[in-house]
Length: 403
Image (cartoon, rainbow, N blue to C red; front, side, top):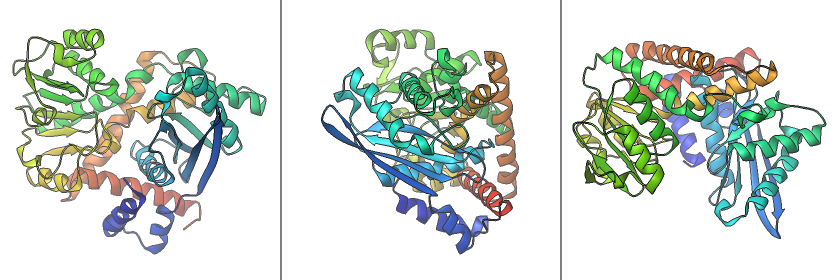
């Protein structure tokens, strides 16, 4: 999403959130835009860190390594992180970082050097009380560990709370690896109860970390997974797939399509299969005005970022399909990142059951706040989520005397 779209979105929801020009100005203006150029093996790579808003707490957001990174994209993502932390009701703001690079063209040593160079470029503006990065597209726990090591060298002290998404051995949190999927499952469970759904057939587009873990968790919760897909294609069985076997096949052969006991279908057809719950967990913009009318699901749980276009949102809302938006549905990741930060600051390490309990409480509380608003208003759940988050940020700005 371009930042121009962020601004048009803000103008659209301004009347619903009671925003005047001063509020719009604060919400559409990043507090800091940091830029650098880093050189690795004789090549130069533009790098960015956008600190969008810290009214509710230190800036929080991932760092991505991707060939299409630019200032406009990072600015937009930093804005959405500001809203995501507000929806999740955690005391953090929003930021984002990125390097324009294709990491697949670099050696492990070059990626390490790039990671350390990023910290050297921006470390004076980062830190446990200022801005807390995390992994994002094409960045990993190992990269977070290198960044932490470089930061601690530069500041001359231990500071594990500087960055989240780290390996367990250097202060990472248990449950972080499944946090996005697990947070989404907790939200889905509540929505299923609210709607009184008895049929629990699920179709999942995307079988990466979030999609695979969602399939595994939902199967354990008694849901029937009827379809899954990856970039090679999709498989469907109206009676339900053997999720354990699908995961085994995916791990061993690289694709779910090699699972023999199911019908092969396309990724686009997967969106339209007979199910009560659809979980897009891969690409953005897959549910559009062209296919929204054919979706049979009663609930759409967005584990991917931006899988539903605005035109499709209107069609689904008119058809009484509940879309649980990405800003809430995949907030389990940033919530457990917050828990990791807290553990680091308190020099603690929580057991998995403690993290899961805290995550469940947080996600259910966030959902309940939004459900109450949703019942009061006639607009869709996504709009309710955005307006709710914006009001929280604006109120924090007001309490600080910035408005």
